[in-house]
Length: 135
Image (cartoon, rainbow, N blue to C red):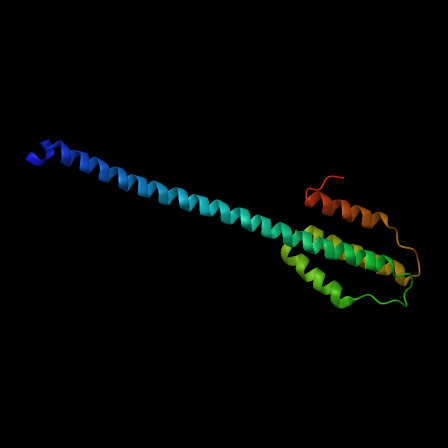
């Protein structure tokens, strides 16, 4: 046990312990930082996807509003594409409301009546609220 009395060995042991503790701390901090960055990137990704889908929905609604009578045709393929994306990336109630809005719009047009644009405005407000965009 004479080596314990040697101050150089004690200093080396303390320094080595410090290096080990520092490496472990660095590893933990790096891991936590990566987890936080991943979560932030994932949140931003889903927000961008929602924005894209909401934009497609708004374009489709505007396109549908321009249909004036039942002889004009809805682009069913486009509607199904938007609806499928909405079911994956959006809250359930938003995709249901979009489907309901379009269905009501075309039921009204099929009966050769004018569609109220208030429902479209309400849906747009809901989108803006979900995206945290102030009026």
